[in-house]
Image (cartoon, rainbow over all chains, first blue to last red):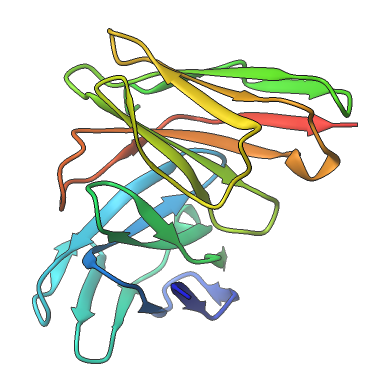
Length: 111
Length: 113
């Protein structure tokens, strides 16, 4: 059975801390792995990873995929209260744009 | 702002009723996917429509059905509502090509009582 597992389930940190969120997957017909940020309702796109070992960066956020270990990490440095959200990992499998999501990691950043 | 709009934003229905949710896709996108997100869970894939045809379906019963129109907007219909259907329903608009991102609407919060 296909599965995407995220850890930790929740995290509380202080502003300025660095966090690492994990995602592991067992999915047939893997195409890509995506990270989304969900603050209230609509998940917003962060990264898409298709190649192993190539880091993607956007400001304080970065992510990397390890196809050998079937996993990915999302790093957030110098966290801010605005980073508080649920971070979702999704794997695209088979036909285009059909995503299998993990449960998410709830991040709370306190001042 | 993703350009993907969903209506209504909130809805309360009684068990056994039927509901229709709507989604307007982003300009230029021909693919709409629907997801159900229960409280504390990640979104679960319901089905996808590509150029008005169903193009994949998740593990949901037939009482979940959909349509896509020539302008690529879409509807999700749920018949014989059950309490467990209470969730946030998200639609995602995309090009339908592998390795391209999808953009989500704000969702419809459905409560079944």
